[in-house]
Length: 152
Image (cartoon, rainbow, N blue to C red; front, side):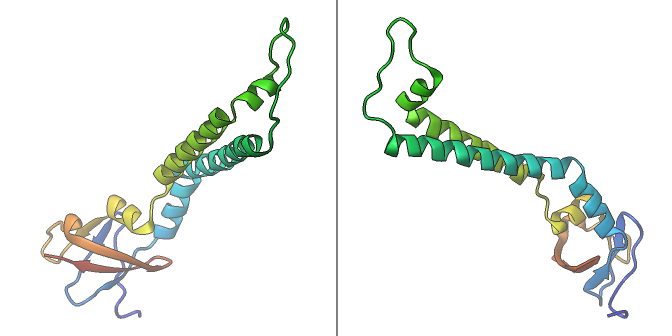
């Protein structure tokens, strides 16, 4: 593998015609740093929102299925919070569904695949100095190793 691996500059991958496997030194650390930052926060909060939304939606469905058929309340003091929830299980379920949808959106915005991260943070240059970053197909092999092909 050492013969097929090309060491590159930080931020740039020098492409050779005969090679397809490249080693991008420092990529794993940069990607891990990216996930620990703002992107990781979006994924965490998105998953948390999905969990809370699932609990709220399950509560609404549970009340609709197993809730009381008749609700008695005092005319002068009005409905309590629990009685409002028992009267509107559909709204509770819809609220939970909206929280799940918002959480999925947050989670998906934070997830950046290794290939996309490499394409957005590194420049791909051929032997003659042409920038072919928009013509490159990348596949992650593991660690700092990538399979790179140029589609002309």
